[in-house]
Length: 193
Image 1 (cartoon, rainbow, N blue to C red):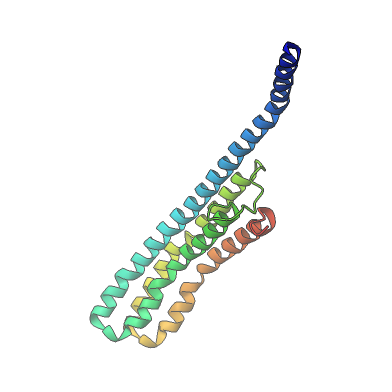
Image 2: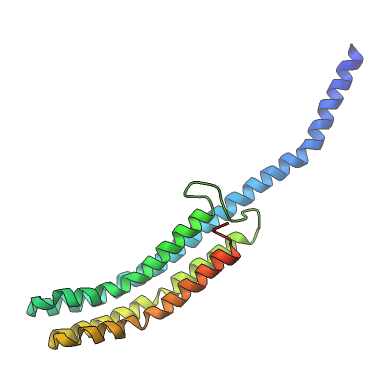
């Protein structure tokens, strides 16, 4: 009996010794997944914060002009409102990218489609967030151009369309940043599986 007890304890000890690297590996894997998920959250925060601040500045620049123009010519309100809202789109791009990153990391429910065991995934996500956030800074210049378009529309309402066309030009920078970010997310980070 004693012989079986010692052999049983040795067997249990052997199993624990053999299993401990697997447990350690599983623990390391969980830590790496959590770290990469945290870095994805940081990427989303950077994209939204940078683009959001830029959009807020651009919208406020346009809004100042819109308020002044509509005080004298209330009939042009709908035209100047479109111009004033244009700098908001950069934040929309950051929002879409953030949702895609969060979905890819499994943070919005479901299974993560990104390889969260890859140590470079989190850092790559940060670069995507910075790319989209920094190209979103174009919203500030868009607000300046929109403000000039609003002022011109106040003087001559028929030029509102031209003002919109001019204000859309800085937007192309944010669109290019968003498209490159989207390519990186889909092809590099494999957010869609």
